[in-house]
Figure 1 (cartoon, helix red, strand yellow):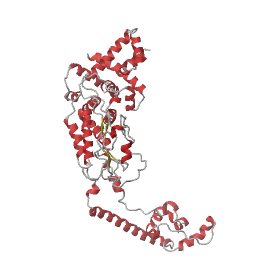
Figure 2 (tube, one colour):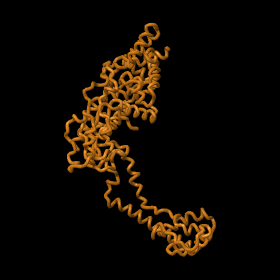
Figure 3 (cartoon, chains in turn brown, purple):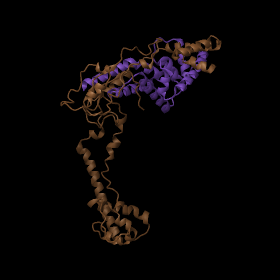
Figure 4 (cartoon, chains in turn yellow, cyan):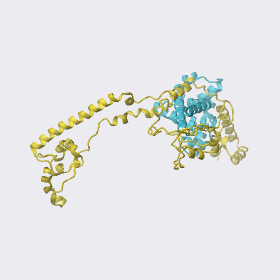
Length: 325
Length: 161
């Protein structure tokens, strides 16, 4: 009972009327709990009397500076296209030359062991009769090539790579190595492709600056960086600024979350503006209709599909937003 | 578009006018490090700015949760559990009194979890269920923790005074 009463006393400011009545009834009979109640109440007074620390001016200055700084341009956009294409072209050329040289040498080595040509179906024709007992078929069935005329450039690579590991024996290539072109790896593609992906990571940590760089959206990943610039839809700003400060210095008033002002900003959304605004609450409708789609829908469009707009989904009056990770 | 963006900026300024001191004080009470509290507060308001730009709502609970999570990241990263009394003493405060110093000393000796529950309940004014939602635990756990924190505070404050 005492532990339960202690817990009630610890949160006495949020007790319901019935709980408070029970506590009072118990306190009338228990001096120890009365002492505890007095100690806990004094804690609340002491803590609420604690003055708040003045935030240094660097706090606001830093936030506003980082908000208003122009978007840093990624390094791959800072380079002129010629410089960017230069190394890329050199990489492609190097890859092609390497593959060509390897293909040539591989062709010579394999031709020394067994006559083989990737252009003619001769090896396939030679190998097929050995594989017919396995497939049960008969005759010549040309195997369609999957990689086109460039396949001969890549074919020596799996032969050289898998030859010692798979067979371990010298001699002619196996049937599978000869007739199944699916062992040929897919064309490696340009080696510089992942570079933008790797280099894009710094943008994830960067705070979202004001888009002074025009439509060059540089927000966090997934925040619309890949979306085309869309018109600003909701010009309403719902600020319940009338509520008092949550805890003024020394003031015993304890605001609850229900009384917290909620700040809702304009949003850049997909062109579903009228639905979004219409679906908003009356508080939104009461906002000044200043920026309602200046140029987004010049032509009367049919009612947009019911896209779950981020605006219409917002509980405007007093939601409890979910803080992200 | 510039008009709307300036509106977001105005909202950010309003938000900072309302919550700059509470959030910074909360972080300072948790972290006991003015520099780290400053960084965490800046990150909190930058996160709020991102939310505002996306049209998402921001309110007090959201700010405290983000600030608290950011402070916990600092705890995990730097293992800065021990309070820095000198740094705390240099923080400008209103009307420094011996009682305030005693309360600060008591808070400094409490664990960060107890401290944050006491702060969120008594100073920030949240209910235990709200604190549980903010911290990702049940309200009953918060009530037990609050009870323990009060007992701890009672013992420490008695020793201080």
